[in-house]
Length: 291
Image 1 (tube, one colour):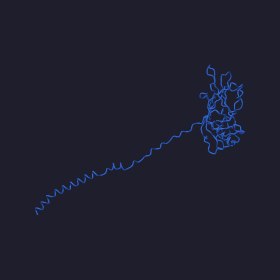
Image 2: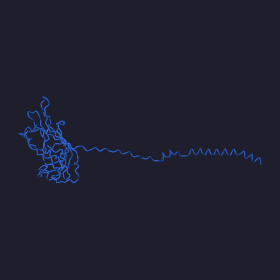
Image 3: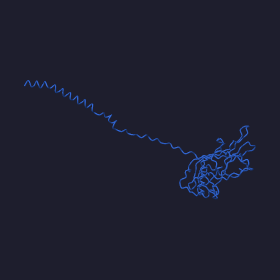
Image 4: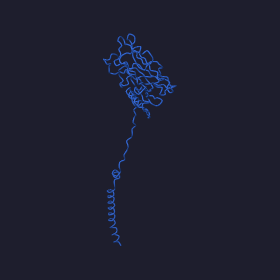
């Protein structure tokens, strides 16, 4: 009995050592074979695509229509009228802002008697006494009851219509023409009839601010000191600013002609915000605003 106990006690340390070795080996293998969660995710998971934030786009308002734009639009309207076309889509001109410059006095002063009557819708300049002043003048035409706009059905909608002609509608430039009078001509040829106009409209019962009621736009230039007064080269310009209005049919331009061989007369409906006189270089000489 004593011998068995000795043998048993002698083998206990050996078994314990073997067990500890086996446990250490298992732990070592576990640490070596366990997958790295970070590395595994990096290899197996696809990157998530993120959308770049959409930045709001600032909408720039359209530029103001110029003389060339309105001359071109009037030419297209004249062609559509002659062809008998009736546009059905909304007119893109309505509501657009415009800044139209009308050159005048390109050939020098107008005769004094030619500007003394009622408004003809054309700007002119004349010499004052002893050529010490220059008088700029433009009297709008009264188109409220004219036959030109009668067929447009404006009598019930508009209380007043003040007309401004656009001289030389074949010219898109805002400056005086460079073509001179043919020296072989024995006299000055007459000007072509006016075919493109701007109608400043005032609705029934609307504001009367800005209405001229027959009063012309007038401005006097005076000599400074002892220097003689000389008109600028290239004449003067009348500036009209505002927004495009519409006729009762929703169109910005109405055209009429007395026959198929006559160039149509086209009128653009407008609401005026500013009128000014400029010299040929663009310097403002005088201006008027409603109110």
